[in-house]
Image (cartoon, rainbow, N blue to C red; front, side):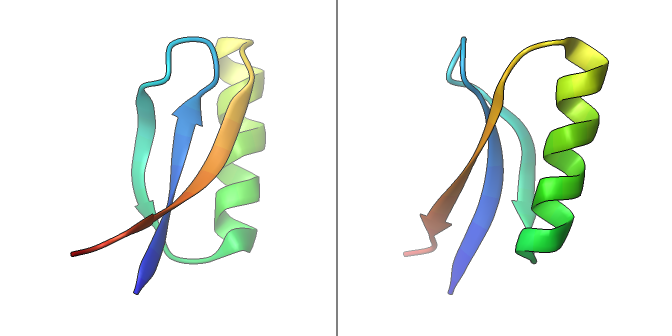
Length: 48
């Protein structure tokens, strides 16, 4: 089952681990972008 994670676009590091829904991911993305002032992207990761 794929999970969503937030990635800092400048550094490439994970900002937050495993988000279950795209709605929650977008909400968290907007919050982090406002808080740290950098672009955050949403990526899908697959568990082995």
